[in-house]
Image (cartoon, rainbow, N blue to C red; front, top):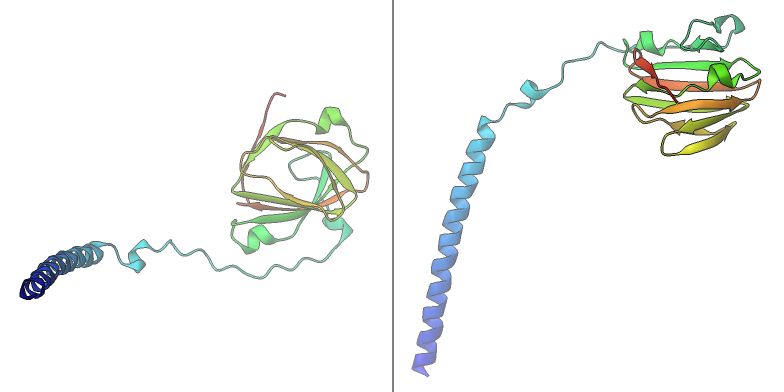
Length: 179
């Protein structure tokens, strides 16, 4: 029996020695991590540059605010003041597509070089094509996002369609493609 007690004691000593070695290696690993952490830049150094302070934008509906000064000749745009208020971070406008739809003018495959684009149908309907999605009929209350640079086009729309569009950034490039 004395041998068994001695074996346990030897085994326990061996375990203690191993755990001591592990603890020592963990301790030195922690020191290495701590020293690495000290060499990384501070939060202030990695902070993004401050954007100009945004201001409130309020826009009330007025018919005279719909202008033919936007991207498409067959559309009238009502700027909601978001681009000015956000210093170009985003743009939002209400778009009225002028009917009747002329596919020869309207149905041109293109993409926008944007970070974000969302469209919401306020009134009427619009039929779109988006690469990877195919044709989709969007009706009053429908909303969709268009990922950056997705190829798309309008196929048809109702004479009374109104869309709310939100885009980031406010200034962007549109590229027309050959279908």
